[in-house]
Image 1 (cartoon, rainbow, N blue to C red):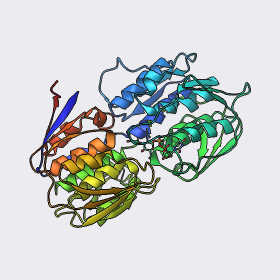
Image 2: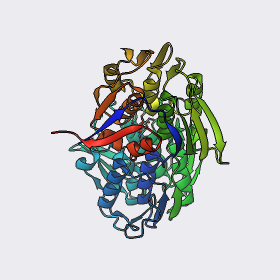
Image 3: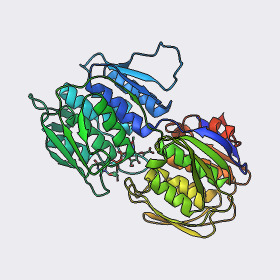
Image 4: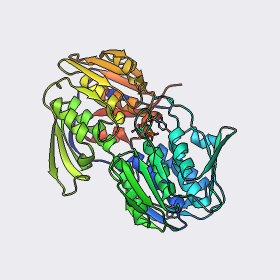
Length: 436
Ligand code: EPU
């Protein structure tokens, strides 16, 4: 296992390009199961979760056809379903990555059957998939649970369009919307998803599906309409930039009172993030680019942050995936901030670790009061999930002295070579093997 060693107190300065989005790429890659034509993706990040998804798709007969091409475009991946017989996403794969559930809708729609190991809980909460199953059942699928696997079968005449309500106790479901939308693309007739997730990753998936020949309108709003088509073709699709990586880099720049230009920045998909960062005194200035989803943006901060209140919400609200990183920044604010988590109320594994670095945090249920301190101090800390790890890196960049962050494999699931990119901006951070 690897760990990071960070010497805090270096100001970040320079320019960095935001990578393609992990959470957009996972359901996009799974959508290649919906056709036997090649689907080419660009700007796919090189991450553990993406490699797991490509491995799973290969087991399902959907293989990379571009591996032997010269590495001129490292983010390019071409997939083609060459064997449509296998349909089992095994426990061994699903347990390493919950997002494996993304293959359920595409397999069911195209192959008429799917067997996907039921994802268990994870460090950030229980994470049920009942809404995915409810949605697919509405389209006519017969779904049972056998030996821990979700076993789904379409009726002999195929899935049929229906009105599907996807709201749950914590709002809609992102991957549930992806599954139902992908399946409905090949269903007979019209599907209307009510209380659909509005996340930019869903808009990107609809864009790919439409490029493949689907007829989808309304993605990005709570009502998505899908008119099913008999088959889908190939496409060439550039993955949207990662708004969570961009937000993490913004927090990193701000906590070091740095000045960093983010290129390929999806600012238009980050309005709630921009609102909270600006309230904290961080300056965000677009510096170029016509596309507000791929612009250049200077992030700078020259003082201790102001305290802010923030509540995580489904998009376009403040994303749960940036709650931990913003908390790290607010640890050194001048006053008391209040952070409430409304998507995953248990997603606070970073709180105790930030406390080891001298942060003053009081948690009550789904709310944390952050009393700003003048400085954080380096300490040995442990990464426990992807975004919690990112928050420890953000905190370590500003902490006095040395922080060692163990178990950074969590971080590697969602950030490509983060240590190299921060080093290029002036941070002192390196990766080493954990002793023993
Ligand atoms: N929920 C249900 N029933 C369901 C599905 C979800 O009650 O059938 C609940 C969840 O327990 C949660 C809420 O609904 O309280 C939202 O969960 P959602 O289904 O939207 O989460 P997801 O689709 O499984 C994606 C991202 C997560 C991100 C969430 C919320 C991917 C691969 N994962 O998960 O990303 O936190 O949406 O925005 O897209 C991360 O990148 O670190 C990460 C965890």
